[in-house]
Image (cartoon, rainbow, N blue to C red; front, side, top):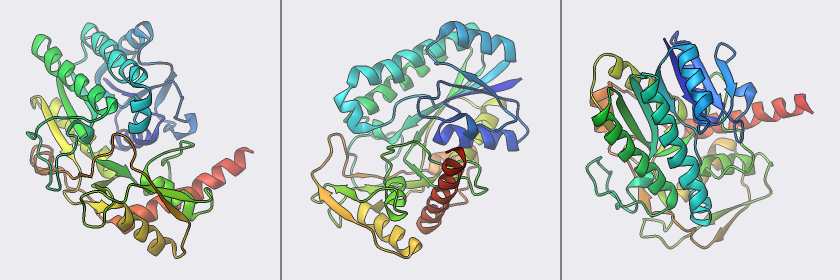
Length: 331
């Protein structure tokens, strides 16, 4: 049996593929390469270039590879972009996932792991958020992901498919072995943007909003190393295969850092200053989003190995050097 990873050529998806390959799994990737890269896919995996909304293609992949589990990353992820293009986000994140789920049911797929988001909570306050907190997404991005969680619950109630939805907090860093990392041009993740600015790939960057109700006025987020997140998915798959029931769980470290604290870390690790301006708040940004990850730790047996902001920043900076060499060699 094989695992289908949608979006497996992208940032988080490519780390997931390496995690599965390292564990001896047979892995199949479906990615349209809109933001992902063929070179980021582990060579041991089979890559199909296409869209998760292509029902005929998905059906052929499920049948042809004997897929027993799907780990679904493919989707759009930029909050301000979702505010500007809500219908695009509902199409790509919700409608296409509905199509994928339909083919999973028809193809007899037993297990489904979904890449959800802390954005389903909205502005929940400074305290670590538990999974039972009120769900009040403040952007089409968050709402599109919550709709998929609802579809999963309804599908699992009607069909023999069990699922796990992992609600990510802020993913950062890169593979410790330098095999993959955040490579998308124009990425909006704070640590990625700061690393690009520190290494001269951007002339400057902006802090969006300095008047939030947080200790220093900037947004607070829970930053999780991408390798720890990939490990949580692998453990979630193992749990489902062992007979575990449906689960929704947070993936974060249960403590947060402000934007200014992150920038201080980048300066400290990189050893040099870089240009930072300030601007107004962006639509859809919550003041503070920090996980209570006790459920993931207890249910999955998940023990994070990279819970260190400076270490995450160092991994991101190393990846910028590796990526520069990769890009130079292709020129």
